[in-house]
Length: 242
Ligand code: 6PG
Image: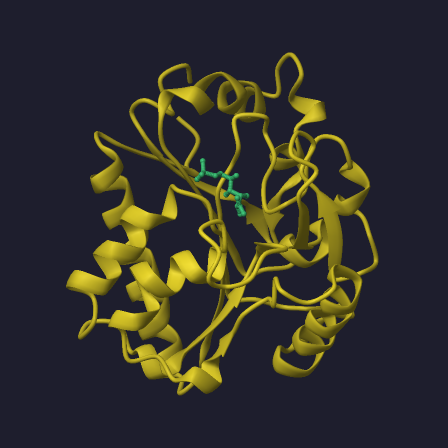
C-alpha cells in the first residue's frame, strides 16, 4: 500500500491520527521557536478532529505557536450555519488558548472579489514566500464526493493553476460563492493532509489514488505537497475500494 495512505478503523481513530500529526508538527516548530502556519478546511468531516483537539489537546499542543488560516470559506457571515469559520470557532477555537492575533479568518460577509484581494494580501504579509507564493507548514483538506477539494470544483480546474493565491469560486450545484486558496498555494505547503471518511467518497478516492477512470476530472487528483505526495488519512469506509 502507498506510504502516503493512512487507514484507520473508524472516523474517530482517523481524526486522532491527524490530531497527533498536528501535535507533532507544532512541537517540532515550537522547538525551533517557530510558529506552525496551518490552513484548515471546513465542511463536516473536520468536526470530529476539532472536537478531539478541543477536548484532549488543549495542553499538549503549543497553541500560542499556532497561526491559523483557512483553505476556503463560504460567502456567508461568520454566524451563518454554513460558515467554516463559525464551525471552527464552535468546535475548536473557543476551547483552545490560541491568540486572536494568530487567527486569520476569511471574511465571508465581505464582497467576494474584495475579500479575495484582502485575503491574498493577508497571505502575502503573514506568511513566508516560496517561489513567489505564500508557504504553509501544513494544509488540512477534505474532499467532496465529486472529487473537489478546498473550493476548487470539477467545473473550474483552472483554479489549480491560477497565479492568484486566493480566488472566488462558485459551488456547481448551489451556485454559492466561495473564497478559496488556489492550487499553486496548496501545492507549495510543506505538508498536505487529506482527512476523508465515509463510504460516499470511496469510489472517487479509488479513482484518484489509482489514477483510474475519471481521475483527471477531479481537483483532488492534482494536489500534492511541496516535496512529495499529499497524505491521505482515511477510515475503512472511505478506503473501502482501494
Ligand atoms: C468546504 C470544504 C470542502 C470540504 C469538502 C468535504 O468548505 O466545504 O473546505 O472542501 O472539505 O466539501 O466536505 P465534508 O467534510 O462535509 O464531506
